[in-house]
Image (cartoon, rainbow, N blue to C red):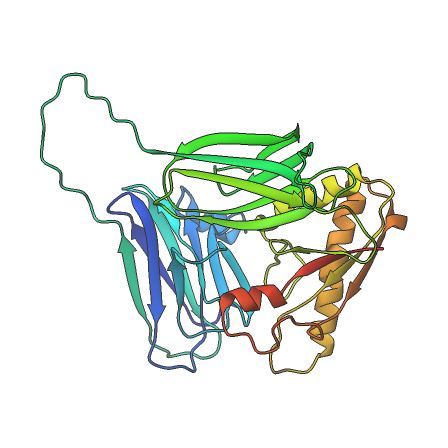
Length: 337
């Protein structure tokens, strides 16, 4: 939190393994409930005091109702008019977590905390010699193709969200992997020399056993733009959220593959029904500059990179009606010069 004002700390012991979600609700719409969720470890209090603990989930959006849900896309949500729910957490029975709930607007506010865990499965006991249980598998494959001719391309891919760490493959035409069958929300990016970087958000329902993804790449042209949705930041600052790492790496690879390309990094914020204040303008400039600094630190020539902030003057949705539209407004775009 920018300032811990009216906080309550909960210690939660997980009763059953599976998906963990929760709701923080209130009848008073004037409340603004935020939360941080930590994994409970030894010496927890001392680590908190020493500022050596990082939350594994957070939501600082301006809302009286918040929590974790299976529909949310992002584990961390910054301050402002953003999605009021963060991505659910996979947990194991017996694990412990600390939930810090804070009312940023006023003291004395009441809230209700509703915890949701997967129900234990009560199955009949069946005797079987040498039982073999194999979980259902999802076959996921990615292919790189040219958008106009449909010809196969050689390039690099990054798949974030399929396993604990992003999957990175270089100089390939296609890639296939089998993983346990369940619901996935992925970010898949692809690069090929001479072609525009592509970054896609892909949702795989838990009913699918097979999914083939063709990524269609366009030849690079001056004036084209790349929307990197996952380059997100902590609330009201230019510090990257963990989910930004895969798109930042994909942008770096794009610049390394295409050494004759120069770009302008454009920063945009979500500020519906408000004028473009100096705070909005400054924040968008600082965030665009943060991306530029990342590329320069990784060895990209500063002469190839410009950065510019637009505040909330170029929102794709001036009156956003959903999380998707708010996220589309709050973006970093790359323009080919």
